[in-house]
Image 1 (spheres, rainbow, N blue to C red):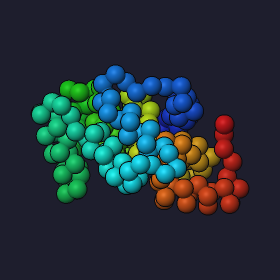
Image 2 (cartoon, one colour; image 1 turned 90 degrees about the vertical axis):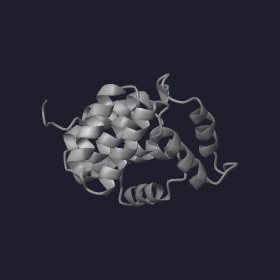
Image 3 (cartoon, one colour; image 1 turned 180 degrees about the vertical axis):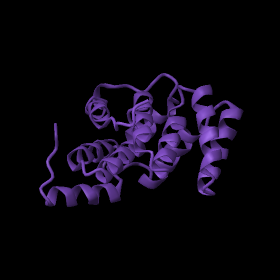
Image 4 (cartoon, rainbow, N blue to C red; image 1 turned 45 degrees about the vertical axis):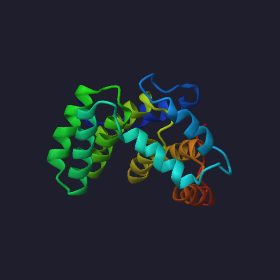
Amino acid sequence: MSDRIAFDDCLQLVLKLDAMVPAPAQPKRLDALFRDLSRFKPQQPAYELQDLIWAVWTNHEDEFADQAMEQAINAIALKDYDVAQLVLDALVDARPEWSEAWNKRATLHFIRGDDAYAVRDVMETLKREPRHFGALSGFAQICLKHGREAEALVAFEAALAINPHLEGVAALVAEMHAKGGRVLH
């Protein structure tokens, strides 16, 4: 596998997110949560909706997969990255339809400085869950790290289109626009 970071491929995917639908494996209860989250004034506090979405993403109906995700999250928190890698590789192999398995592995790659692999896993996440504002924000952070501000801005704006309550992201976007950032679409 090449170490080239697939910025352009991922950016093209980000630009097509509006036309994509979540994979059938995504829990249907996410639809109502995302509808509410997209409102200027959601019925529930935005932080509660975000927490619920993350809870749905990180839980799986298969008990083994659910326990493996918990083990991977704990290993990352303890900085036991080799264990986290083994668990997440096995999880992606066993449950390739699970977007959050890909996203957690993307996060691990990012933490380890393996940005090429992180971007590839972000793409896999977004193919399964095009509303994954966490994966979009992660891609944007990788773009910033590599001086690709225009691509970062597109990804941050895509994340905000899904979840307008990401205050840190909104502040970054405002700052980037103030510095003359331009969107690519």
